[in-house]
Amino acid sequence: MGKKLRLMRVVGIFGVGAIALLSCSPALANLSKISFDLSQISPEGLVGPADGGRSLRYEFCIPRSAEHQAEVQALNPAIEFYPHSPGRIRCSAAQILCMGETHSPNWRETLLNLAQLDYVERIDEFYGE
Image (tube, rainbow, N blue to C red):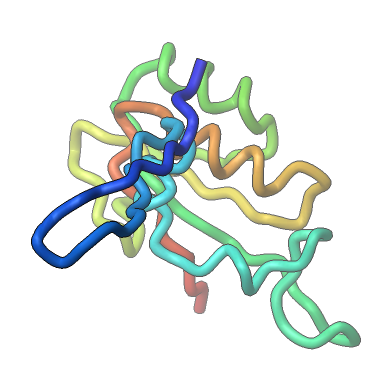
């Protein structure tokens, strides 16, 4: 169970004040692994104007194993694996490139769950050609 954000009173030479103690949940701590702005994405998983939104594609690397692929696919069956490409994110030879997109009902939850995986170092927006 995640920790709750607590507010503590601090007394110092500058007087009494309140600061937020960031004992936050793992989901919030791992949000920094996502290198793009989630606020730009609509609830439907689209970016851009309302009359011309598009899905945001993202990429990340996982260790090259069937167990890791199965765990990622359990979180999002639509994730695509590219074992022969490093992607723009530059997966190593010991890793597999994974790509997903945000146009789905649970896109935010999916991204946060992927970011919580210890072996996912970062999730970048993919700019296709």
